[in-house]
Length: 455
Image 1 (tube, rainbow, N blue to C red):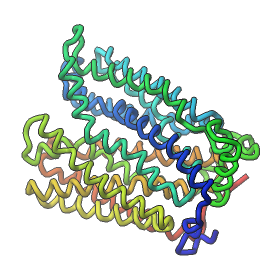
Image 2: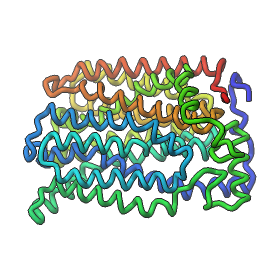
Image 3: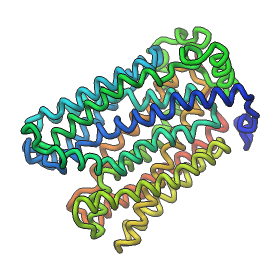
Image 4: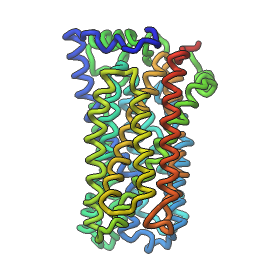
């Protein structure tokens, strides 16, 4: 396919009845399952904020700097383990490997209820990051392995919507747990929060193998004819698939890693994605920002953060559906979302009236959550021709670098800057504008020099 064409002809290829039936079956297995799994993943990594609100800091003697370190060490463990985990994934069965990871991180999440000192909390948060690191890049790789180029944006949006809803209602659920069983059996509510959510994750892990699929050429949940169709439709888009024609053994781990890190296109995508995920740290501060707008009381503050995520869904879903009808426009749509996000951040830095700033927050969140699935699907389809293991490593690097960016993003909204938060909104405006420029450049450069398979 000529990358310089303005229209991706694959979009307009009519699906046969067999292919339509296959896609519906794959969707039925994969999408609800990974949605639920990501919901638990998101809650387990972010429930530290709800534990803090329920009295964890006071009970274990954790100060504000210690809390910040607890957030950061998770990201460090996460970044360290992502690439090795996807190396294993490319040669393992996803239907077993992902639930295995869930058992590990769910166990660690539950054991966090036992911490008694800040040092113990830091150690458990680091371990949680290591154990959970393989999940998100695994899902990115699986979606890139099952769906054609014009089908991926809305699937990534479906996956990420679990995080949006977890962000919207996670605080309310956590409040219900901590308030209802606080002190039961002499255990504090914040400890029960870790226990309940961690044990629930482990329980779901034992159900997941019945629904998760392996790779198109190897999954046992499809008939031989369905596997043939699944592989053929990916080949039509030039997308390689693990287990296809013995290809899985063609490249060593080391060679796949070298192929990935030596490709300049990967680092351009990393730079763009870091600007998006660096701004994801805003979700840690939404309750603080909403409270600063004049809303009082923990319950009211929790409820007033919900519209921020609802608006994000209302904007992101139709945008991603449209992106799948015009795949070549994904980087330009991401650029548009990021530039608009930069504009609203700049307005927030200069306008402090309650109502306008609340509206700006809604659209800043919308820009970030819309750009994320567009960026992921663009990275996935751009790498479609790479060897599966090289693509798995590359996607893990993109995701890992993005998560690394949350470390500096977390520094930008200190309490002393309230209520204006000029440094935070100003920096976010610059980051989002930079990200828009990166994806605009990628649109031009990748059309002239796309990713190519290497052996």
